[in-house]
Amino acid sequence: MAFISYNERLKRQQARRDVALQRLKLDVQGLAHCATDKLEEARNAITHQIDVARSVVAGKISETHTAVTEKLTETRQKLGETAASVKHALNPAVHIRRNPWAWMAGIVALGFFSAPLVKKMFSGKSNGAHRAPAPAPAKPKGFDFAAFQPLLNMAAPLLAAYVSKMASRIRDDGQVERTRSATLARHGAAPPGES
Image (cartoon, rainbow, N blue to C red; front, side):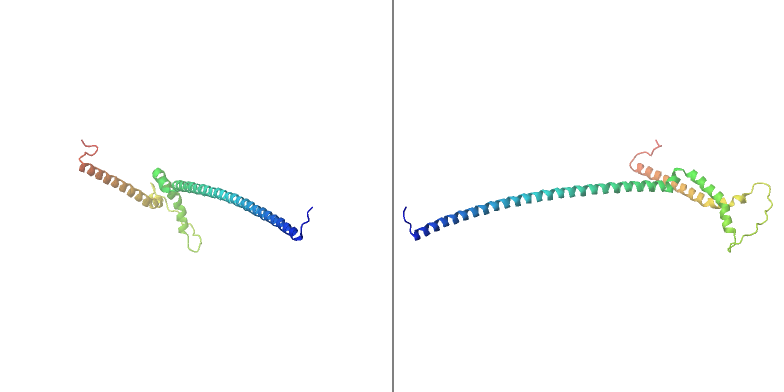
């Protein structure tokens, strides 16, 4: 074996140490690069998952918003229809137009049967004391129109309003007919019913 000097040994150890440090440095750089790549892949995967989740949530929110909006629109329409049908069903003018004579008879009957009650309500004294009944007058022979006077008093304004309404309708219908005839004459056509 050859004798190696101390300096020579020291140089060899230093060379081995430098090689080991170089390997260690390369290993650390490789590990750092690998770790950076892994972290980048993980960050990209997480970012992708977050983007997918965000788009899914945004889609769900949009679908929910659309569904709620449609339901609210449907509900508004149904409520509007229901309100219109209830308003139509509870409108007395509709029922009176449909059955005017039945309503007239009902009003007359109501006046006839409520007249004695109204008369009793307004005939008492203001302090609430009851009057002694007046002696009944002798009934004349024949028909007594005075018994129907309260009924006639109640029915007269209703009958007058009804007759006035019918007269205005007849007048309006005549005016419409005259307007239509004048329009047809202006255009050179004969009014219906004339040859």
